[in-house]
Length: 90
Image 1 (cartoon, rainbow, N blue to C red):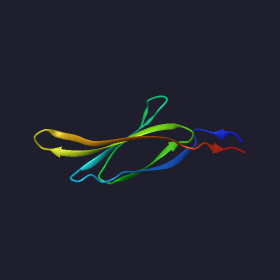
Image 2 (image 1 turned 90 degrees about the vertical axis):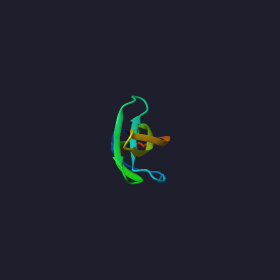
Image 3 (image 1 turned 30 degrees about the horizontal axis):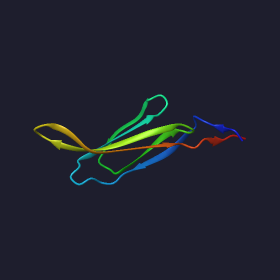
């Protein structure tokens, strides 16, 4: 069977909570093109996005701290990569 790429698939990103973090900045990029496909700030430790199948992605999440004297400060960046599975065609 051939694989079909470009079909949407749901991916849930999860990460560990960071003490004293106000929020988290999640970014997801297509590895081949470098295109950012997700940019989300959330106070949760997970986020579900719809991505195309058969594509390699890199994702990173950064804990966001707020300091009224300096503005936003980032810490505890984490990165990982993965490939969504191709959908089998008939």
